[in-house]
Amino acid sequence: MKLNETSWNTQPDSSHGELETLTKTRQEFGGRTGKPIREVDGIGLLTIDEIGDDHISTSYDTPLRSDAFEKSDEEKMEIIEHHFRQIMLALGLDLTDDSLKGTPGRVAKMYVQEIFSGLNPANQPKIALFENRYKYEEMLVEKNISFHSNCEHHFVPIIGKAHVAYISSGKVIGLSKINRIVRYFAKRPQVQERLTVQIGNYLKEILATEDVAVVIDAVHMCVSSRGIQDQSSSTVTSYFGGVFQNESKREEFFRQIELK
Image (cartoon, rainbow, N blue to C red; front, side, top):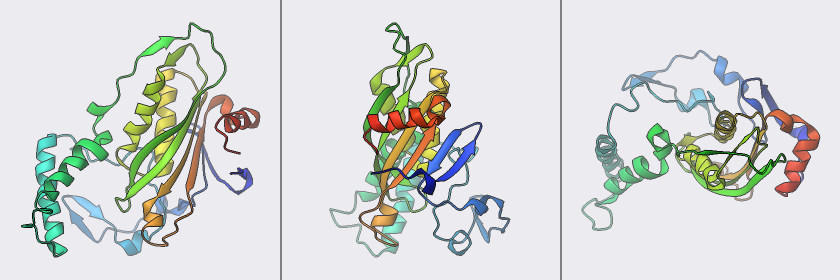
């Protein structure tokens, strides 16, 4: 794939590096002041008509309530199991069937302990840093990191690959930890732009270097399995900090990951 940078929507931010995306985002959304028409559990809800079906992101941080971690995982699974059972009943499914009767519990366990486990900071990967004793001063690239996430707009899968690079400022990280970091942030309801920035910022913080690059290429089931039902498109987002904001260094990175 040839990168056509002139067609990209660039959103520079001094605190977050440079985020570039091929996905059209709705810039004006953050400035809207429409009132929610109703509340559920203290949360104001916008109607689908107010939000539309655009690909939007409202913050760089995952939107979490202040009481997000007051309930234990067991309590959360019990609540989800109850409500998912109601969803299945509303769809007309027979939960006395042997194949279906365990589904609410399985879904609850999957949500809390697997596909959304990245919401809980307790599941953050343990990171150990090492001195750069080899004095390796070029970029280190970990490419083709596979991940599964879920679109926060429709709760359907995002499936893709991440390519990550950094230049050491004196510390290095175990290679497998880069994969774990990608998957930790992927295991939550996500928007791809946010996922890209979260990975980039986290690596910058723990490695104490501005020189971090992240590219994500992913397929969104909310595009391919519903709505427009486009089976062939993918979304590419990238994050460039430090020297990676220079065109020559970015081109070197693209060559390394064969994205050109």
